[in-house]
Image (cartoon, rainbow, N blue to C red; front, side, top):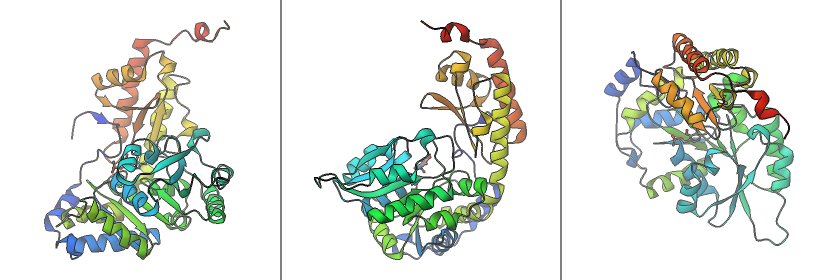
Amino acid sequence: MSGPVDLRSDTVTRPTAAMRRAMAEAEVGDDWYGDDPTVNLLEERCAEATGKEAAVYLATGTMANQIALHVLVRSGHLVVAEAHAHVATTEVTSSAVLSGVAFARLTPRRSMVTAAAVEAALKPDPYGVEVVDLLALENTHGHGGGTVLPIGEMRAIRKAALSAGVPVYLDGARIFNASVASGTSVTEFAAEVDALMFSLSKGLGAPIGSVLCGSASFVREARRAKVLIGGAWRQAGVLAAAGLLALAEGPQRLHEDHANARRLAEGIAEATPGAVDPGEVETNMVFVSAEALGREPWEIVGRLREEGVLANVLGERIRLVTHRDVTSADVDAAVAAWRRIASDVGAPDLRASSSPR
Ligand SMILES: Cc1ncc(COP(=O)(O)O)c(C=O)c1O
């Protein structure tokens, strides 16, 4: 299909022909009553894939995170999380409103949480006023650049949390990307947390859905909260059918997205030295500084749009995300577009900006 090269997010993929067929033919029931066989099968497979006892299929990753916080954190208590984590930024008002939850924020380099920082953050408040109920991790970390929190560090973090008596939750929206990039299985990552969610609708390529996984008792409570927030749906098997294909087939092609992201970064770095370090691209996200062109990120995003390339801005940087609907030729087209913009805009006079005052 021709159209813009859409690098805004890996959520933009369209269902494949096989997914559309599976959706049309899905066996369904009423999921409120727990009798949609396709949803039930998807939940079983997701529990298996994460090595957890049970799973619950939900509309969005935000809903999964919010239900997890609602179940695991008491109103007025704190969640320790990295400052730029999705739960602590985009969703911060959701958890304030839905669950009365507040955050204690960690600010490590490149958003890479360490066991030492966790240990310090989980020291009990001597006055007993600030109570931490949960440590929330994110892997891969979106704002950090699609970075992988390595299993060694996760194990050390888990140990620190256990000795402080604090459970660990993982926003694993892109845990399959982390798994493919690191060679660590999803079950190994999941073993270091009490509960986790992952998205079928991102790199795995389903049109909709995320899954919350954990112990049977946690998932029982999560199902109650799902009803409470109006998330209980009915013949959701039409969506779960696509989710089953995403789970079965999505992970094995993620390495292509990672290779495309790396090549995109290399092309941009060659055109504009200093705009991006390809060595920092671990998965399917490329973060580019517009400063190297002496321009504001949104201006460059506007120029890219005129060139048929869609991008986003996160923080101070332009974010480009590869996914199933981005081909190798699309990467070439995006790099060519960047080159044209770079040569049109011209390099800034770095000597002027770096000269001592
Ligand atoms: C790390 C992370 N967690 C959670 C979410 C929320 O997922 P959804 O958009 O399905 O609500 C996102 C969305 O991009 C995300 O990047």
